Image (cartoon, rainbow, N blue to C red; front, side, top):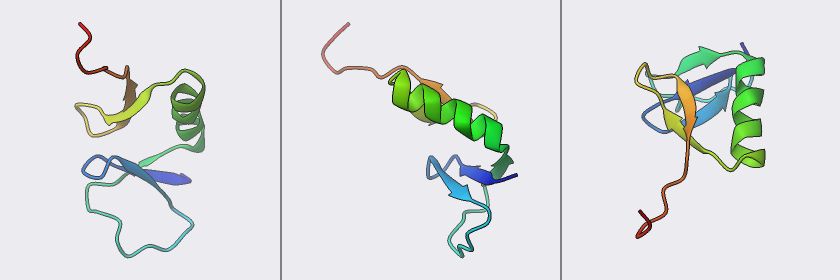
Length: 67
């Protein structure tokens, strides 16, 4: 696995880069899943979020004041 995801920080860490600040809730994800999420974020304007299981997912942006 090339990446880990921390739900508490809502961010990715590359596993080949040493980092003493990776939180204990970080879970490994595949390179393929990371790429899928990045495509959704960059091309479909989604927002990165933690799923109920602590794994990364994407959600729609909610614009304030618009219902």
